[in-house]
Image 1 (cartoon, rainbow, N blue to C red):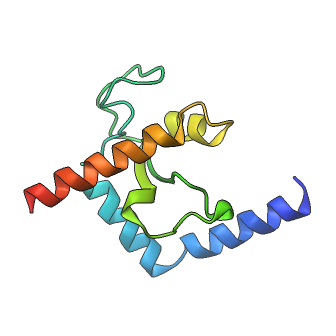
Image 2 (cartoon, helix red, strand yellow):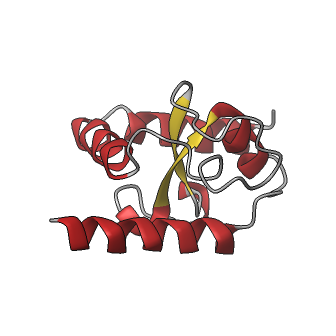
Image 3 (spheres, rainbow, N blue to C red):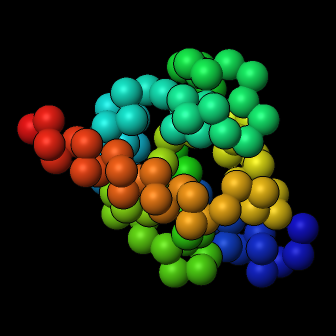
Length: 112
Protein backbone atom coordinates (compact mmCIF):
# COMPACT_ATOMS: atom_id res chain seq x y z
CA UNK A 1 0.00 0.00 0.00
CA UNK A 2 1.50 3.37 -0.93
CA UNK A 3 1.93 6.13 1.65
CA UNK A 4 -0.90 8.33 0.28
CA UNK A 5 -3.40 5.48 0.43
CA UNK A 6 -2.23 4.54 3.92
CA UNK A 7 -2.66 8.19 4.99
CA UNK A 8 -6.21 8.37 3.51
CA UNK A 9 -7.16 5.13 5.27
CA UNK A 10 -5.76 6.50 8.53
CA UNK A 11 -7.82 9.70 8.17
CA UNK A 12 -10.97 7.72 7.37
CA UNK A 13 -10.35 5.41 10.33
CA UNK A 14 -9.96 8.43 12.61
CA UNK A 15 -13.28 9.87 11.41
CA UNK A 16 -15.03 6.53 11.75
CA UNK A 17 -13.98 6.30 15.39
CA UNK A 18 -15.92 9.41 16.37
CA UNK A 19 -19.07 9.39 18.46
CA UNK A 20 -20.93 11.15 15.61
CA UNK A 21 -20.03 8.36 13.17
CA UNK A 22 -21.01 5.58 15.57
CA UNK A 23 -24.38 7.28 16.12
CA UNK A 24 -24.93 7.77 12.36
CA UNK A 25 -23.95 4.17 11.64
CA UNK A 26 -26.61 2.93 14.08
CA UNK A 27 -29.16 5.30 12.51
CA UNK A 28 -28.48 3.97 9.00
CA UNK A 29 -28.66 0.34 10.15
CA UNK A 30 -32.01 1.12 11.76
CA UNK A 31 -33.25 2.95 8.64
CA UNK A 32 -32.28 -0.09 6.55
CA UNK A 33 -33.83 -2.48 9.08
CA UNK A 34 -30.49 -4.22 9.63
CA UNK A 35 -30.57 -5.69 6.12
CA UNK A 36 -28.16 -5.55 3.22
CA UNK A 37 -29.91 -3.28 0.73
CA UNK A 38 -28.45 -5.15 -2.23
CA UNK A 39 -29.44 -8.61 -0.94
CA UNK A 40 -33.00 -7.53 -0.09
CA UNK A 41 -33.39 -6.38 -3.70
CA UNK A 42 -31.86 -9.64 -5.02
CA UNK A 43 -29.12 -7.81 -6.96
CA UNK A 44 -25.45 -8.52 -7.75
CA UNK A 45 -24.90 -12.21 -7.02
CA UNK A 46 -27.19 -12.38 -3.99
CA UNK A 47 -27.37 -15.84 -2.45
CA UNK A 48 -29.40 -14.99 0.67
CA UNK A 49 -32.04 -12.29 0.30
CA UNK A 50 -32.36 -11.62 4.04
CA UNK A 51 -28.80 -10.99 5.17
CA UNK A 52 -28.72 -9.74 8.76
CA UNK A 53 -25.18 -10.72 9.70
CA UNK A 54 -21.97 -9.00 8.68
CA UNK A 55 -23.85 -5.76 7.97
CA UNK A 56 -21.60 -2.75 7.46
CA UNK A 57 -22.45 0.87 6.68
CA UNK A 58 -20.84 1.89 3.39
CA UNK A 59 -19.93 5.37 2.13
CA UNK A 60 -21.18 5.38 -1.46
CA UNK A 61 -18.97 8.32 -2.43
CA UNK A 62 -15.72 7.62 -0.55
CA UNK A 63 -14.47 10.16 1.97
CA UNK A 64 -11.24 10.33 -0.03
CA UNK A 65 -13.28 11.64 -3.00
CA UNK A 66 -15.15 14.23 -0.99
CA UNK A 67 -18.07 12.07 0.09
CA UNK A 68 -19.86 13.16 3.24
CA UNK A 69 -19.13 11.24 6.43
CA UNK A 70 -22.59 11.74 7.92
CA UNK A 71 -25.02 12.34 5.04
CA UNK A 72 -27.81 9.76 4.97
CA UNK A 73 -27.88 10.01 1.18
CA UNK A 74 -24.24 8.85 1.02
CA UNK A 75 -24.71 5.84 3.33
CA UNK A 76 -26.11 2.37 2.77
CA UNK A 77 -26.16 -0.88 4.76
CA UNK A 78 -24.40 -3.72 2.97
CA UNK A 79 -23.32 -7.22 3.88
CA UNK A 80 -19.58 -7.82 3.84
CA UNK A 81 -19.78 -9.52 0.42
CA UNK A 82 -21.58 -6.60 -1.25
CA UNK A 83 -19.46 -4.06 0.62
CA UNK A 84 -16.35 -5.68 -0.84
CA UNK A 85 -17.91 -5.65 -4.34
CA UNK A 86 -18.66 -1.95 -3.94
CA UNK A 87 -15.15 -1.15 -2.76
CA UNK A 88 -13.22 -3.29 -5.22
CA UNK A 89 -13.56 -1.72 -8.62
CA UNK A 90 -17.15 -0.62 -8.22
CA UNK A 91 -18.95 -3.68 -9.53
CA UNK A 92 -22.04 -2.24 -7.85
CA UNK A 93 -22.50 1.17 -9.41
CA UNK A 94 -22.60 4.25 -7.25
CA UNK A 95 -25.71 5.37 -9.12
CA UNK A 96 -27.52 2.21 -8.01
CA UNK A 97 -26.40 2.67 -4.42
CA UNK A 98 -27.35 6.37 -4.36
CA UNK A 99 -30.78 5.50 -5.74
CA UNK A 100 -31.28 2.87 -3.03
CA UNK A 101 -30.14 5.27 -0.27
CA UNK A 102 -32.59 7.89 -1.60
CA UNK A 103 -35.42 5.30 -1.65
CA UNK A 104 -34.61 4.32 1.94
CA UNK A 105 -34.68 7.96 3.04
CA UNK A 106 -38.05 8.49 1.32
CA UNK A 107 -39.52 5.37 2.95
CA UNK A 108 -38.18 6.44 6.31
CA UNK A 109 -39.64 9.95 6.04
CA UNK A 110 -43.06 8.53 5.17
CA UNK A 111 -43.09 6.19 8.17
CA UNK A 112 -42.23 8.89 10.72
